Length: 113
Image (cartoon, rainbow, N blue to C red):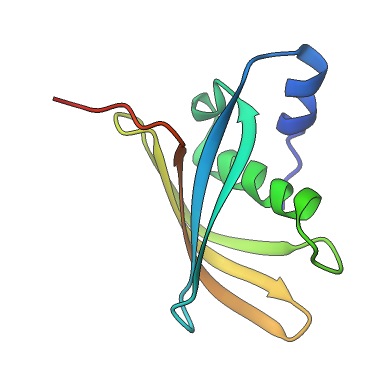
């Protein structure tokens, strides 16, 4: 997992933050969860992999997991015109790997005509 410091940098620079949504689907069981997290308003200027890393860091900082979550990313694609990141990979936990599907977007969606 690459460290980009994006959450920390936004706090240092006092850049406006935006609420983003992430939908995480456990590909093995079909379980899903939706999360909200704050990040810099220009988050979607970053590469897709860094956007995913920003979300995983949020989970590590805000969740009740016993230890920092690790993951392997198989793919991450950013749809610039829709401001959506789609990713697949595996969460690495004590009992093994859990395959996941992930979608990240701004909480307030811009409507296209």
